[in-house]
Amino acid sequence: MAVYFDNSATTQVDPQVLAAMLPYFTEKYGNASSLHSFGAEAFTALVKARKQVADLLQAEPREIIFTSGGTESDNLALQGTAFLNKHEKKRIITSVIEHPAVLNTCHYLQSCGFEVIYLPVDEDGFVAEESLKENINRETALVSIMAASNEIGTIQPLAALAEIAHDAGALFHTDAVQAVGKMPFNLHDSDIDLLSLSGHKLHAPKGIGALFLRDGVQLQPLLYGGGHERGLRSSTENIPGIVGLGQACEISRQHGAEEIAQMTAIRDFLIDTTLDSVEGAYLNGARENRLCNNANFRFDYIDGESLVLYLDMEGIAASTGSACSTGSTGPSHVLRALGLSAVQCRGSLRLSLSRFNVMQEAEYFAAVIPSVVEKVRAMSPLGEKKNAIRS
Image (cartoon, rainbow, N blue to C red; front, side):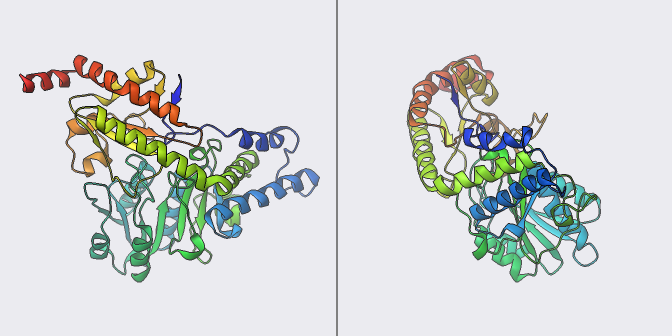
């Protein structure tokens, strides 16, 4: 059996999404800015997709800016806010467990003279409201807290954090790349000013994303050119990708509730059976207020990378954490922020689901994981430490 449990890294393009995209590569290939009929077809598709994305988020179509993905959306939100307000407000607040797209952008802003505050999290990965209250002031331009962790699945209290930001006169941004399609959003009735999403995390292709920008919120562009996307993201629109993202959002809007219920049941089965059947297994992150598709474990006396490789031999694709830190060999900054040691972090395993996963796959994993863990422990120097302690 081939099982794909690495959907937080990327998802399969939904066949309905691919079918919607294909005509815009070969038949309807016009530039949406052109005046002739080919351009009109592309423009009509652009308008439709913008509404589909907005409808999933319960926002207005004019509040959706198409980008190349989550990383660009995060950069546009953070840099665009910071540089527009550089003469009045120089403080940015984020958390220590953000995605590298946010953390590295914040590091860059620090090099440009901005002050960045990195809020700690508790042992389950939650940002405390009091911590934000203690660090925010009238010099704060933006608070950026991810909706849900890409590694441990913890869902942050966005409503409360955004209210604190607004009370201090700051804007609130959330990286919702992992959350869109896995939890509902109603941006009409929220204090979220900016929200980032990425197509390839919800069954659209790679290379397309969007930024929700609330009416009245202004940004300084990162790209200058022909004035596309209200002048905030100049570049000829990627119509096939935009169509795919729109279709993916439409599917999620129509079937999201049942898909979330399905993934939640599989997630809970994976968590319960793994903790029950494997000695020295622990759950990373919160048991409640957790993404419906995320199960992140750590195992005593084991190397997570070896575990991933041995699971792959059994036909199961999983990961040790984020796939977005290219070349990183150190322990996860997210797990370290929970208070775990480097050795504990080393034994992590992330399973992440999609609408295409079924319970039979989880049952197969449950049957395989105890023997795979024992095999890896027996071969690992960390396993030797376990045996020494027992003797």
